[in-house]
Amino acid sequence: MANSDFLLQFQDFENDADLMGSNAGATRITIDDNNSKPQKQRRAAGTALLEDEDGPLESDDTAELLSGQKKSAPFWTFEYYQTFFDVETHQVKDRIVGSVLPWPGKNFVRHYIRNNPDLYGPFWICATLVFAIGISGNISSFLVHHGQPQYKYVPEFRKVTIAATAIYSYAWLVPLALWGFLMWRNSKVSRMVSYSFLEIVCVYGYSLSIYIPAVVLWIIPSEGLRWCSIVLALCLSGSVLMLTFWPAIRDDHPRVVLAVTVTIVTLHVLLAVGCKLLLLPDWPGQVSAS
Amino acid sequence: MAEVEDVNKPLFAGLSDVSIAEDIPVEGDIAVPLSSRNADDEISTLDEPVKDTILRDLKAVGQKFVHVLYPKKSSALLRDWDLWGPLLLCVTLALMLQGGSADSKDDGGPQFAEVFVIVWFGSIIITLNSKLLGGTISFFQSLCVLGYCILPLTVAMLVCRLVLLGSSGLVSFIIRLVVVSASFGWSTFASTAFLADSQPPNRKALVVYPVFLFYFVIGWMILTFSPSQ
Figure 1 (spheres, helix red, strand yellow):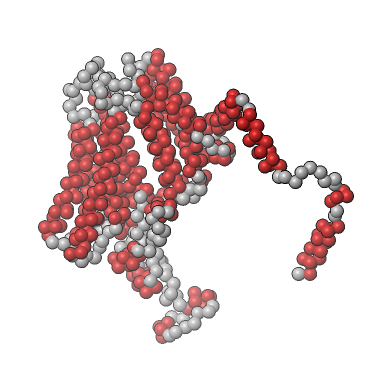
Figure 2 (cartoon, helix red, strand yellow; figure 1 turned 120 degrees about the vertical axis):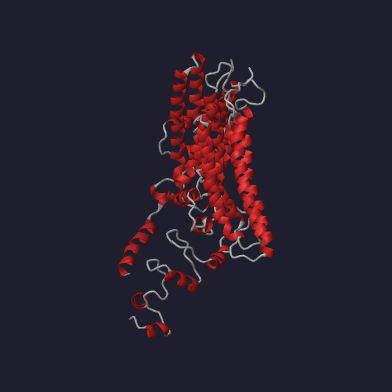
């Protein structure tokens, strides 16, 4: 019955079949309807569905409601750390794609991470990037110096350790600093959006994933192509970072906003350019001492 | 209900009617045969010559090598795990990768300690990763599998060294590339045959990728090995 008075009156629901037939949508949460209806019902019911197929962003307060509910095991047990690896293959794939293609409407944290930050992505993307830098630096220096008689090919193993230190400290210390700074500003400026430490680590980790193909392109011995690939990767991952952190800092004092923006971008640029300068041979004319 | 009771009654009645002592002579001791055999084994392994002990362990290691070379779906590698094989393979690989010294002091090939650290640390990290993703395999079983599956890459290292003794031009590079790629594929395939079953199906790729990266890095170290003149 579609009578609105019937829906407003208190009914007792002892038979499930009646429930399905008569109250089409009053207590059920459906995703097939247009998107405003499930949101209202979600807020009313107090529960939420964290599904990846939802299109528009849910409001920030529902997300805040859910942020405290995930981790219940104490931090010295193994299960506590297992909650950080609660992802599936397609989720990781979606997150990587989302970090490579920044879309102005989609905030990376809200759309992809959705209160399920994982440590799998950041850790293994950093590991892959470290080895990709080492290997492609090796190959490119070999190709550059190939014809010269004094050159003896060595696998430059030290560079892998340098790259590993640089990348892992960038991916973990910069989010720590940024999170600390945002927490400090939180006490002075109330904001709508605040991220947990793991979400920031997640964003930084996934944003490094665009560098992996860029680094593989370093093998081709053309300076122009190398700088192009680095600049393109910088733009894409920098814009993902900025799109993510803009809602968090825009409510602040303009000078602080500017300072934070400039810092994020500068550190990102420093990482990219530093890796390129340290690990690639810059001058083809140099010959290693025999 | 009545039929169940009827079925039950003759069963129980039959059991109470059987008297074991008259039909089957009971003899022997009541001790569980498994424990008595273990006790005998332990006593005898103390007295046996050292050669027998070593040969038994070597035979177990060799059997697992065969399992790696022909990866079928058997659980022998997982059930009786041991770390002798991985240690042997890691030491062999590290020793063979030693000869690639450099002209300058600070850049060179991987030293013995570096290979060791990469192999063991890498295996531990992959095992932790698979356990954190919810795998049902135990820590040492996974270390055992990853260590044993380095065998094809060690064989490839041997082949590469022999090829490098002959020549070191483009042809030898192509041969080495083919051999290392084939053994890298074999290692990855062998280890995923053992490890992938322990994961839920929507996370298999997440577990297989670090294994792929691990063997890729080891294969890369083997391929780029160049002996000092």
